[in-house]
Picture 1 (cartoon, rainbow, N blue to C red):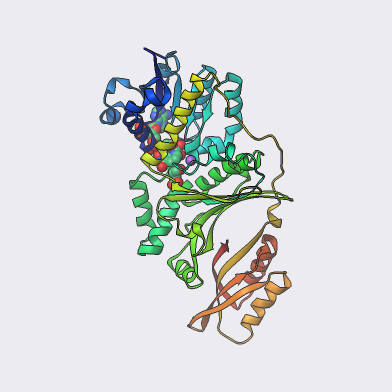
Picture 2: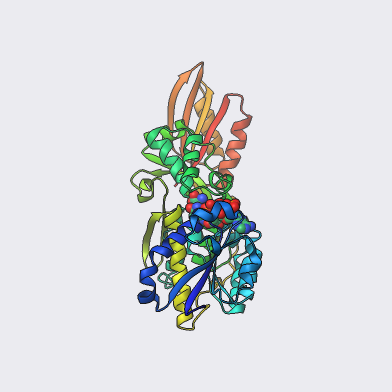
Length: 428
Ligand SMILES: NC(=O)C1=CN([C@@H]2O[C@H](COP(=O)(O)OP(=O)(O)OC[C@H]3O[C@@H](n4cnc5c(N)ncnc54)[C@H](OP(=O)(O)O)[C@@H]3O)[C@@H](O)[C@H]2O)C=CC1
Ligand SMILES: N[C@@H](CC=O)C(=O)O
Ligand code: NA
């Protein structure tokens, strides 16, 4: 505190940092009546002072030295929005040890090491909040920890990456090329510093690890999550999905089953009538199924400057209220169980598959018998087109164990009549 004002330092002034600065400035007239105290951004850590100068009213608050912030006893709250593992992790731990509260949007760090950071916050009796780390502006972490705590959560499924949802929307609605859509998402500030984490499903995987940990009260880290991205999805897959009444979405799915927890991120066909199918652009949505509440859905902007800042500033205000009532550290780690992860071979999914086969009698029967012999039941078998003595067939299975499906695919790949397996996509 300085001059009776809460002092905030922001680490990083990129998309989110700039948004936080703007939202705090716009909220200035509300601070005193809302929080009972005035709030000031007194320091901003950047790498390049010159580049950041035009983004703040008073460039003298900028510094490129962490020392200037960590040694300043007047700073109450550190807002980490630089991203990445280091030095973010060290700075957060230093800040907590120095008795400062921390708010972050850093899912990479939390999905890998959240437990250690929450323990450090508990030991220091300080707040460590991260609502922006999952699904940007959508309130989902707080609702899971608070309003839904009277439930056993059975399943969490959602679209939790804005960049890939934006890309898939542009490819589906406007026939845009993948690369062009990714560039647009990057220009709009949705993508990560390295967009590979978006398009390969890693960012969504990190968010699902965080949601599963909170929802199921058992620690799930990113390495427990199976991830597939959207780079192999083609315009033809999207068109065929439409023909069977579906859309393709990158879905994160976490289930707490009797055989353990399963968490995965996959592009999936989803029935066009399902509410998640009409979540477009950078919007995210998270479905949470609780034993008492039933189905709930949280919807909003999952990425971008102001939506993400909305979540960060919400956390900052919570910290300030906690400070005011002397109850800092009220919400910490909620993982009090140790549930094993489910063996992947026992995970059950439904599949869509495109195969190019020789166009001659007996081929379809041979394909069907491979599936049959491996315990895979077929829901739909569609012959698409013929050319150059090849036929394309689309297979949609019933729900089957992944191992049974994988075994069938291994055998199909060895058969000379199968010329190409063009796509394998799960169906929600
Ligand atoms: N963008 C979004 O929509 C969302 C992002 N997030 C998360 O928020 C965080 C920030 O993301 P975003 O704002 O998009 O990222 P940006 O790349 O736009 O901004 C990061 C900022 O941090 C600065 N920075 C990085 N490392 C250091 C360092 N060592 N010292 C000082 N400054 C540093 C960068 O400086 P410089 O420019 O000089 O490199 C840059 O200004 C990430 O954890 C991200 O995953 C969460 C939800 C949504
Ligand atoms: N890159 C992320 C940003 C928010 O977490 C996304 O696209 O969702
Ligand atoms: Na959020």
